[in-house]
Amino acid sequence: MNWAPIYKWAQPYSDAVLNFIYPPYCIICKTRLESGLTLICKTCWHRLPKIDNAQNQKRSRANLDFAESQISKFLAVWEFNKAVQEIIHEIKFFGKKSLSKFVGRELADLMTHDKDYCGVDLIIPVPLHKTRLRERGFNQSLLLSQAISTLTNIPVKEKVLKRIRFTRPQSQLNASERQQNVKDAFRVIDSSAIKGKTVVLVDDVLTTGSTMLACAESLESAGVAKIFALTAAVTL
Image 1 (cartoon, one colour):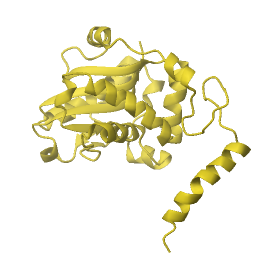
Image 2 (tube, one colour):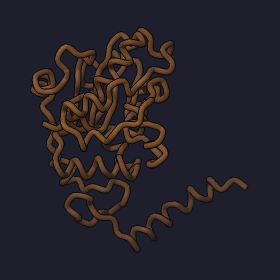
Image 3 (cartoon, one colour):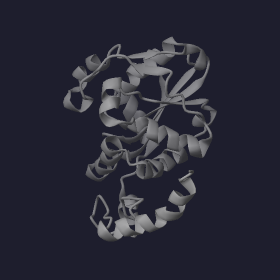
Image 4 (cartoon, helix red, strand yellow):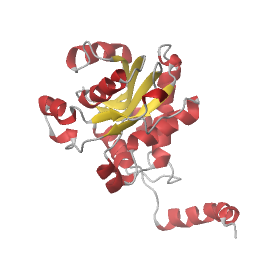
């Protein structure tokens, strides 16, 4: 028996019951929401600190590891703060797809309004090690990439870049330790799929840029023509 039509018919009613028993609240200000799909109210969403990406380019080259790097350009949506952290954590540790779609929409909007990113052929999410993927059950960077792909029609290549070495969480390390932690941690599995292509690397948060650069080095060695970077947030 095909249960899909029945499930589709019943879902609005089951959602209404769940919202009545467990009313949804904004993850930031705790205001009650009309629907549990968004997880964040409109007021808090519009208050998130948007990045000035013109200034961000200069800062990326000066303060991060991007000087003379393989990454041609880097864009981010927000400055990392407590509110943005709440959003990232809901996606990163709980796999909230509804929220990843909202963030993906912001990322897609950045791409489509930047002339350099208009030539992107492929979206590549920063991969998780298989151990971490097994623990979580999903890759937050892939969720964001899929949301971007839906809006831009740019295909996602999730399996061409592999994390071959289990690494410590970057958040626990200082800048120099981060570089060493991800050194030689990534490998391109299928170079024919990306050779000569312009790609955009997608991740949730960028701090020093060490992870992005380690990925970019592997991609460049495999023959990628140009590499852009895109994240939901950046620490300043």
